[in-house]
Amino acid sequence: MRPIGLRRPPHCLIRTSFGRRFAQLLALGAAAALLAGCASLTVAYNRLHWWAPLYAQNYVSLNMSQRAQLRREVAALRDWHCSTQLAEYAEWAGGLAHELRAGDLHYGRIDALYGQVRSAWFGLSAAASHRAARLLLALSPRQVDQLFDELEKDNRAFERKYVMRAAVEAEARYAERMEKQLRDWIGNLTGAQRRAVADWSREIQPIGADRLAARRLWQAELRRSLRERREPAVFHTEVRRLFLSPESLWGDEHEEVRSRYRESLVALLSRIADSLTTEQRELLVARATAWQRDFERMACRSKGSLHAAADSAPAVQALN
Image (cartoon, rainbow, N blue to C red; front, side, top):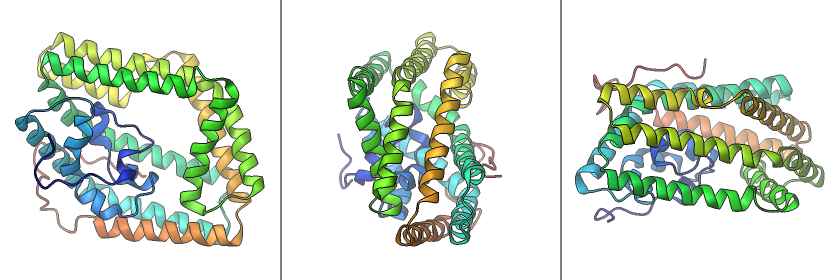
């Protein structure tokens, strides 16, 4: 049931590329809103603790106490995040704007910027893992079953879109999604840029089955840990491992697939950067500058944030 007076979250936060996974809910924040093209990043970020129960309700029916716990955990995580991470996000966005003006976005630099985004996500996941573990331990066996039933529905939807369809249809979906993301950043694409996206989609299309297998393996391991219900300290350790080292579940073949995907994505972004029109470059510079201002505005100005308490995760310097 929706709390009284709670409005629906912005569409951009519902349809993030990171997925609406309950176990990863606490890792949604500024980065997710940014990558999804949120028009009002500050509002979305500041209200995340109120919208969090709406995300969760897509996967499991929470009682009043659990919804309150979820809001507290998300608020605490957001306070940690705004006081330790957002200043570095702002620095990242400012650096991107500077390099765009200088025309210095070559393959190596884009790969480094991409690595910084991944590092930021890793740091946020590290901070979120113990909070997610507390929330998961509060679920009843019936709620656990409901959660994984809903996750499997998502898996089957992904399978229909990217695994079971003919290769040409899957390629078209990858290309459509990437074109939409790029339009959020640079506006309408040129013919050459659309061809670059099409080339990329053909290259990465076969990874769908591998991604699906990895998702199901991760979820199965989490479900096993929940089913065993060992002492909280052990469960927290297991959840942290799943958040921070999912590769421990995968074989070398999957790691190679992930590496190839990163290389192909960076190569695509390099082609796009090389082909930017003057108008597109100016628009992306304006976007990056706006992100910098948003992050600077959202960053906590004092250390006395509401929940920066003893149970908060250690600060993770994510964008070094």
